[in-house]
Image: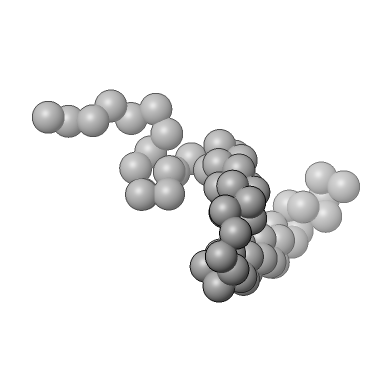
Length: 65
Protein backbone atom coordinates (compact mmCIF):
# COMPACT_ATOMS: atom_id res chain seq x y z
CA UNK A 1 0.00 0.00 0.00
CA UNK A 2 2.75 2.47 0.93
CA UNK A 3 4.65 1.56 -2.22
CA UNK A 4 1.57 2.27 -4.34
CA UNK A 5 1.09 5.65 -2.66
CA UNK A 6 4.71 6.67 -3.11
CA UNK A 7 4.68 5.61 -6.76
CA UNK A 8 1.36 7.32 -7.58
CA UNK A 9 1.17 10.27 -5.17
CA UNK A 10 0.94 12.81 -8.00
CA UNK A 11 -2.06 11.08 -9.54
CA UNK A 12 -3.70 10.69 -6.13
CA UNK A 13 -3.30 14.41 -5.41
CA UNK A 14 -4.66 15.30 -8.85
CA UNK A 15 -7.73 13.15 -8.26
CA UNK A 16 -8.30 14.66 -4.80
CA UNK A 17 -7.98 18.15 -6.23
CA UNK A 18 -10.42 17.39 -9.03
CA UNK A 19 -12.94 15.87 -6.61
CA UNK A 20 -12.78 18.92 -4.35
CA UNK A 21 -13.12 21.25 -7.35
CA UNK A 22 -16.19 19.42 -8.67
CA UNK A 23 -17.70 19.20 -5.18
CA UNK A 24 -17.17 22.95 -4.72
CA UNK A 25 -18.93 23.63 -8.01
CA UNK A 26 -21.88 21.41 -7.06
CA UNK A 27 -22.12 23.02 -3.62
CA UNK A 28 -22.19 26.50 -5.12
CA UNK A 29 -24.99 25.49 -7.49
CA UNK A 30 -27.24 24.04 -4.80
CA UNK A 31 -29.25 26.25 -2.43
CA UNK A 32 -29.07 24.05 0.68
CA UNK A 33 -26.53 24.74 3.45
CA UNK A 34 -26.12 21.04 4.34
CA UNK A 35 -23.77 20.29 1.48
CA UNK A 36 -21.81 23.46 2.29
CA UNK A 37 -21.17 22.07 5.78
CA UNK A 38 -20.04 18.70 4.44
CA UNK A 39 -17.64 20.29 1.96
CA UNK A 40 -16.25 22.56 4.68
CA UNK A 41 -15.48 19.50 6.82
CA UNK A 42 -13.78 17.74 3.92
CA UNK A 43 -11.65 20.78 3.17
CA UNK A 44 -10.78 21.10 6.86
CA UNK A 45 -9.57 17.48 6.91
CA UNK A 46 -7.53 17.97 3.74
CA UNK A 47 -6.01 21.14 5.18
CA UNK A 48 -5.09 19.29 8.36
CA UNK A 49 -3.26 16.67 6.29
CA UNK A 50 -1.25 19.27 4.40
CA UNK A 51 1.54 21.60 5.41
CA UNK A 52 -0.22 24.68 4.06
CA UNK A 53 -3.54 26.28 4.89
CA UNK A 54 -6.06 27.16 2.23
CA UNK A 55 -4.76 30.74 2.21
CA UNK A 56 -1.21 29.54 1.49
CA UNK A 57 0.20 30.10 4.97
CA UNK A 58 2.08 27.33 6.74
CA UNK A 59 0.32 25.42 9.48
CA UNK A 60 1.55 26.58 12.86
CA UNK A 61 3.12 29.75 11.49
CA UNK A 62 2.57 32.81 13.63
CA UNK A 63 1.05 35.89 12.05
CA UNK A 64 3.51 38.76 11.73
CA UNK A 65 2.05 42.09 12.85
